[in-house]
Amino acid sequence: MASGATVLAVAAYAPWGANTGVAWLTWLLVAGCWLAGLLWLAKVAVRWGGGGDKPGRSHGERMATRWIMGAMLLLMAALALQIAASTWNWSARVTRLPDGLEWTYRVAREGWPTTLDMDATLAALVRYVGLAGFFWAARDWLGTEGEDRGARAGSSGRMLNGRMQRLAWALALSGALMALAGIIHRLDKSTDLLWVMRLRDTPKEAMFGSFPYRANAGQYFNLLWPLVLGAWWTQRRGGFDASGRQRPAGASSFMIVCTALMIAAVFAAASRMAIAVAIAQMTAAVMFL
Image (cartoon, helix red, strand yellow):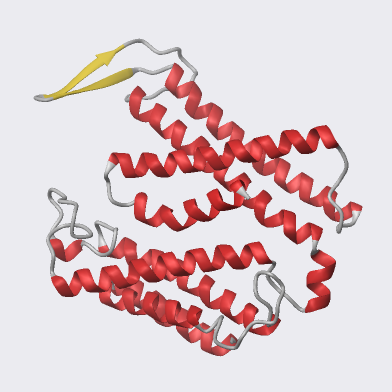
């Protein structure tokens, strides 16, 4: 329960906290990622003590999954170790003073990775490890129900398990709310990001939603709305809600409203490349759906 709530909260909050440039909002997101990762480690420890494999999958499928996930874990660990070694073997450290920057230099070990800003590299390490922890926590939370209930989901025609549906809804509602806020903000012509944050050297025409630069907002919505549309399509084909009950006809239709809001936000952001990508995606969606 706690792991799932953390994954959903972080997924919904991420686009709001990661883009504003406000330090405490970003670190709140990092703290959520660390919490999800620690909860995942606790679950792994409990399972390790209990032993046994998860049911619902063949031996070959379990072995293939272990090899793939093991390779990903090794790559993530190698990158984290490289950043940690750079932090330990730093060449310079920057102290931010009221009247400027003060640089402290030292001779780093040759042949080892190094950094010219030890504090920034340490912060990057903390963020990266938190992000990796969230990835494994989300994969574990989403995959557990799929493995335990795979046979039942296949027999009922559900193409998304309940947890994937909840994640899709969290992303859809968060994205639709951001799209609506961005459109209203653009019409209001406010000079502050989300009406409350004053950003230096950022003109109001460049802002959209929680994004200081409108092109990034368009890119995010172009990544998100096809996912929400696909979730709506699979839910319509399955015809079941997150708890397995027959879904009313209008229950999944609200996802279309969320999708439409995000597509409208792409055009409202007025990024030419994002608009071109959105048109191509809509053409593909019409052809395949």
